[in-house]
Image 1 (cartoon, rainbow, N blue to C red):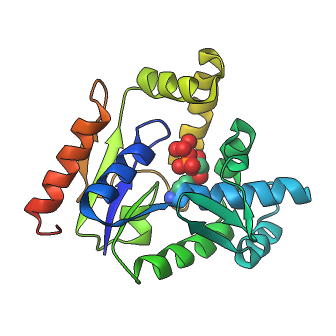
Image 2: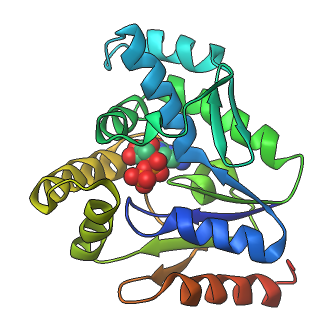
Image 3: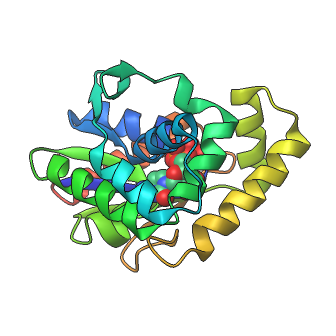
Length: 212
Ligand code: CDP
């Protein structure tokens, strides 16, 4: 069983999904961390971001795991290394290739099949788990999303706005696993809302649907 939380960068998915998982005693799944791990491995190996075949082979062969809050890539703790703006940019590029997406989606499904999850990403409700009993699409204004990201990474706001625009375009315009709300998703605009309020709202939705 999975509660799906999709949305663009900076909408608050990670913090909110963690909070919902904790409140409901479910496991948190950060699907973006998987694409980031593939990107980090590709950067380290010097693989061309357009080489779909090489990236697909890489994505299928890597061992990507989560233990507590740590992300492990072939056993190495890469939790911090995958959070750089460079890896974020590379992740949004490698994530355009169906060869990479298929490998990640298969892994996500096999995790979800084994337990109760709150999974966040771009395509959880539209591709990974189309029968999820609760799908949430989190948004926030462009300005607020950029402000949050700048505060997190320490980058100048103007640069974040530019990068965000490029990544949003790539995420929404790609052919496979494009970012869009599932037809049965509940849209929640987090602009001006605190994390606690958003978590409470989703927990309430989950309870009303008999998921907790
Ligand atoms: O934290 P942020 O939202 O910036 O990024 P993330 O969720 O860690 O995802 C990094 C990149 O991976 C995104 O820009 C997406 O292009 C890609 N991604 C994806 O394609 N599908 C997912 N389910 C999750 C992430």
